[in-house]
Length: 143
Image 1 (cartoon, rainbow, N blue to C red):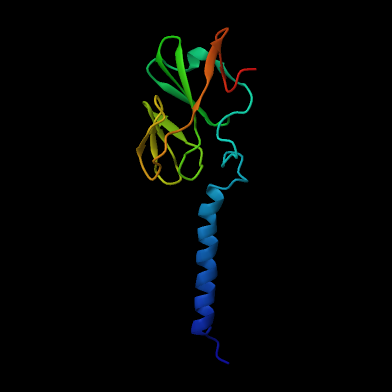
Image 2 (cartoon, rainbow, N blue to C red):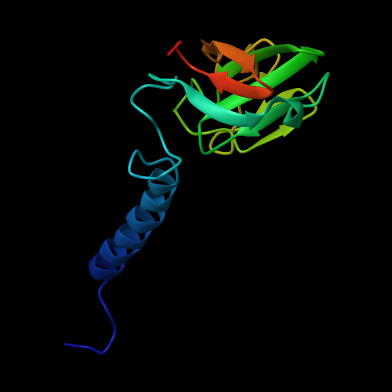
């Protein structure tokens, strides 16, 4: 037996390395991740988001831990959407102006309407009820 690995063994080792690297991509969008996919992309109970004035008029704010995006089209008016991408379920990672970004596959959403602007996502973000109560935002179904 020579000191050089056989071609078949090299092929197996390369395959194992590629499978391991491919698994890293799966882990980034894993349902096991704290910010990964949620079975229910919208809240099933009221969620306190804090001060309403944290959402700029004419802009939006991402609440990544709560998987929500809230926009404020005009003073005192708010709209909320799930921040879970409708393509593969990853949580959006940032908002630039009024466009939300999905880090997994590059989908972009209008966070004032939920509309998918750039694929692979084609389905809009689900809208979530949101109200301003005593200067605080509460999203999700009524208590």
